[in-house]
Length: 445
Ligand code: NCD
Ligand code: ZN
Image (cartoon, rainbow, N blue to C red; front, top):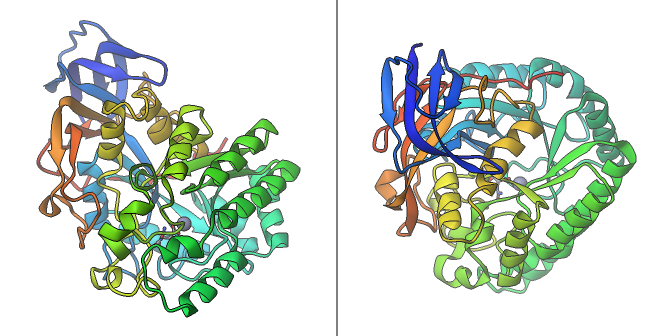
């Protein structure tokens, strides 16, 4: 495997930025210090560059198997590597859904060998497969996804009884449940009422999924988490009400965490006019007030995780009637670049990046401290970025089958110089090298 010495970088840690060298051997960080003089097979000069732990994108829908007309695992993980991400956690709403051990094992086998970054797999839970919880944990899922509201894949929401049982099992087995938190009935009621009104204004999608739908689902999950001790990650939090609910639940000592995504931090309802169905996503992009509440949530730790919710669809599916268009925005390649841009622009702090993009995902999904930390003994997964550089996002730079994102044309502060996976360069600032990714399982305690 060999050795790598990275000289003179600025290591961005959750509590400090330190100037240091990193020496890597056999895929692991062997030492961190000043003036390291180990003889390495390869040396990288990181003078003037920022070094972060490799990004763990905990929320990715790569669409393989079954939905590869939208995108595929090769493109998805190439995009990840080019975007500074070294591990992705792949969502289970593929075809067939990952609802039993057979689907899990077949998906892991299918994707192994195609991966340009390391990957873990979620299982999905619904009313009819609660008995698969333990076998899927035993097989090595990193966690489970539960869809409470209607979304891509039409996986029906569990009953409240099943939801309670899922959180009991989460506590018993120390496994995180990632929730798509929207009240199914509220969303269906408003959607059918508004879609019948005849308006095709893209903003109607936002109105059809009001903040109370998100808030109610979060508070219900939170109550059950409090009573069971189960651990819940509320993914893609989009509203002020959602942030407030998580903040209150945390004060009550519920085991509840919040994730948001770059599109909720960088866009608001005024963008529907410009982008139309391209920015249709569940839950919806909301008002400026919601956007600012999410930024505050990151600042005070209520929102502890940032994921891309990379959700590709074909160009055809992302056009036309707002009610018929598919929900989801691509993002695996732009997660870290957009986060770095926000940090270098002063919207969020630089030190929060390793927490929300690496440490917290690794801790919640059983990968820490092998992954998610820049420390001796950890896997040598890192991303090296030039804070003085910039990246103008162009369609031809994006690996997704349909490189349509609202961020095309944006010029971001900062540029990735290298992505390093287990001590090997997998992206050198222009080319993705691999596939070198491996399948990772949750570390059992
Ligand atoms: C996701 C998808 O397309 O898989 N869509 C979305 O709008 N976010 C599903 C999801 O995460 O809800
Ligand atoms: Zn979702």
